[in-house]
Amino acid sequence: MKSYNSIEERIDILQSRIAAYQDEIKTLETEPKNNNERIIFKFIETGSTGKTKDFVRELGIKSPRDSLYSSGDVSKLIKDGASDISPALLEIARALASARNKNGPAC
Image (cartoon, rainbow, N blue to C red):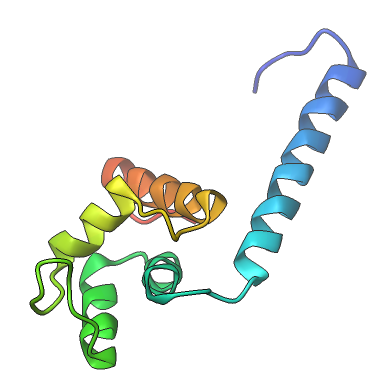
């Protein structure tokens, strides 16, 4: 564990983490406003582009290519984003995707 200059410094760091977690919780408690946000929420829920692709296909949503959704389409949506996706929601999905790619499933 890292050493700190003071207990106050450690407390400040912990409080900033709490604030970040509270912001993330607020973001995840909001209802999706459109299909792209529904897709991102499902990815966050499952942590899997394959399971998300299956979910999107069940809904009958077509990809931007006007064909069935693929795992690559889900990855592209996460990577490139879309104007109708909340930036905070996209940030959560990207962090999850990045952590999963580097270290296996993320918390």
